Length: 446
Image (cartoon, rainbow, N blue to C red; front, side, top):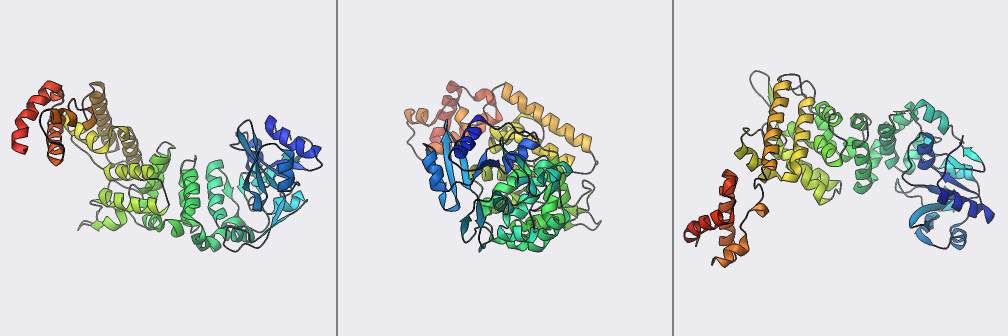
């Protein structure tokens, strides 16, 4: 079985062999190559100790030297070269207490998480596959190397990674591995929010975001997003719905483009439904104000998982607006564009469509036609270059100062009033017209 290694990877391996050491490409790059996927990066494992690696190559960076990793720089690209090692006892469900270097490749591969990630390759030896990783690749199976209980006890994040790899590759998690995850799921509370966030995003933007269901069934969401468990356990007795809140959410994830902001928004768009639930005397469930409450809940969750401010703000705005249904007139749509922001509006249409496709068939065509009309008017407003943002007004604060208005709250109030007029009537967005209007407003404000 042959893998075309990049020229620089072969160069590093050959140089290490020239100095009397073994070296192999290892892990995910081997897995992806065998699957016909393009590896994102190339990791190399070697019998050489870190200081020996540093002596062999001209430009190296000490990225994790205490764990045996040196980054070799070639053509401005870094290649991680890690010494064969045996991990000592794990104390915190993530870090080994100590690392022992070894000259035995098999011992190094034994400590890795899954069989499909525990293969090595070089052009001299070919594939080294001690744990039937190739067989599991062919059978589309995620299986731990050795005892699943041991692997997950070493690093609790591996449980999430098992589901994430299954989502990315379209694989099944093998039974013993699933059982171990169920037993050890509570230990994931030791894992940092930053590491969980990375895995969550990778799963969400994969081809199988519905594997959020597996995270729930295996007890993992209970640890890092208990709100999702409540969603999964909240039915929706309503003619517009045919799934629980959680199942509806999963269906919307499958019906929206694989984009981080969009998938996070769909994950959280109905997060407040359980807390907003009321049931009328006919047995119909209602979820009044769930978008507004949901935006606040989404912000707390995204902050808890250490998402950046831009991602958090975009998602929360989309959650808040996902159920807004203005009458389709240019005036109403202009005001919605002004409130939400022109850059987010195309995403809002995607969110709305996905939401509908996760509902019952009741009035589905009618709902989709409404969105088509909404989008049509939005495009008209763009085509006519109508003002939907204060920065696009043909008059600004400097102009008002020249007209004798002093900087401060009053100047802001005048601009606000002019902007309201322009939103109502875009033909007013001309300098002379706005100047005349400002002259009428100024006496009443000042």
